[in-house]
Structure formats: structure tokens, C-alpha cells
Image (cartoon, rainbow, N blue to C red; front, side, top):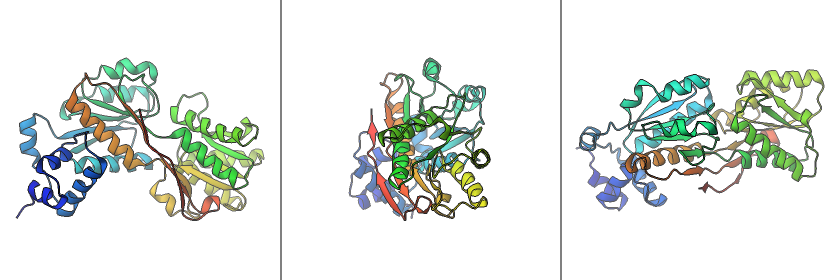
Length: 348
């Protein structure tokens, strides 16, 4: 016998209407209410009748996720989080990896798949504040993931880049490191997350009474393992002295760790390292990598719920911006075991 919405209501202890509101992504629900209903859905294996619901609503029951690529671990794990969050609300996700470059992003926004989805979650890398009107003109409900502010013209979800970077750098300084590398900024290229993480790094350095040293800011042409490895190789060849590394993402850190270990440096005894993103593999690297956890599940939840709010409310709704919190996962690469320091979530 199939599981019904009545069964979910009985197990969760809420009314059928409340369960329906959770399934349909109603924004005005307490987090604990939503969690209890989602737990009951998971326990019972309930699956909404999407065909009937979509026929009544005139919607597809599908949302789009536009991301740069699926070969980068962060975006692959983000896509998984969005799919899980959407599934709990009875939605399917159409994922569109678009590669890098402004033209690819613009083509995706204008693309042929827009008529197939009820709304789009869009992870932008190249569009800037001056593109607010362009995004506002997109006729499909839209939520942007990214660190560029669009002056309140579009719904936006971002992470605590500056605060997380500062916490990571402060952790290294508190461990006695005094020459901490920032790996890797983007030279001559405006990437908002890189700018914000560099700002957090600099705040921590100067708050500790140390001089900001441009020689300790390392640049890379990519935020992949090869970029971290190449940058670290050049630093060692140039004889730059350092005893700590704050890597702007985990894949940079993993590439840099490989080069350091091959050169005979011990981690963390000679060089302590902290990354950013809390990728799953960081728990299993040798040593396990300390990292900033940007709470991908919180980002996914905020994105899906904000998109559903926009789909329900239409273009006249005031745009909102939400910044998720973070936690600092302290592991072996910076001299600790499994510890955690946490920040709050902020919304505007």
C-alpha cells in the first residue's frame, strides 16, 4: 500500500495542510516544523504525486541549476545538496554545467531550457554589479548564488567569505604561525570570492599587529589542484619563507600539500595549512585538512526556499539577500584534531 500525505501528517504530528506547505516550499514555516515533516517524509519514503500537482498548478515541478562545471568538487557537492533539498520538496533539478566565461553564462540565462523549468538557481562567476538590470530582465524566476552584490535587484545567496577567511587566518596565527601565505588570489581578474577571502586574511593579519606583506599573497591561474601545486612550486623555488598557508579553497590546499610533502616539509610541523569549502575528501587526505565549512546544505536550502518564494510571489516581491554562516573544521593539517568553531547565519 502506497504512503500518503495523511501518513506523513500522522507521523510528523502536523496537519495535512502543514505537510503540504512543506512539500510546496512555503517560506513562512518554522525550521523545526519543516525538519520534522522532512524527517517523516524520509522515514516513510513518501513521494508526492507530481503529475497531479503540476497539472493543477500549471508548473513543471522542475527547477534549473546553472553552475560552471561538475568536474570541480565544490560544484559537484553543491549540486548534490540542491538536488537533495529540492527532492524533499517534491521537485526535480535540471543541472546545466556551462563552463567558464561571460558569454557562456549569458547564453545559459537566455537558453532554450528556460521554458522547461519553473525557476533557476544560478551560480555566477563572471557577472558583476553592472549586470543587475540584465539579471532583472530574465523572465524566469531567478536566485543567484555568488558574492557580487546586485544592489538588491535580484534574490541572492552568498557565503561568509570574509568572516570565514579571517577565522582561518586567526587560527593559524593563534597556533604561533607568523608568516602565513594567502593562496591564491586572482591577479588582474575580478573574482568576488577571491577579493573577499583576501580581505578576511588581511583583517586577521593586521588585527594581530602584523604588517600585511604583499610577498605572502600568492596568485594562481586556477583554483584547482594544479593551480595550488604550481603556485607552491614557484614559491619554494623563489625561496619565500612561510610557516602557514591559508588556501582560498580546498583543492588549492591539496595541490599545495602534495608539493610541500614532496619537498620534505612536514605538515603541520613545518607548515600548517587551512583550506576553504570542507570538501568530503578533506577528511581523508593525509594529513586531514583543516578547512572552513561554508555550510553547503544551508546554501542549498536557502536557495531552493528563496526560489520557491519567488515562484509563488512573482516579480513584484522585494528581492532578498541571505548570507549563510560557517564553521571552522580544525583537523590535522593545522595541528589539531576534530574541533569546530562556529559562526551565526545572517540574513538581510
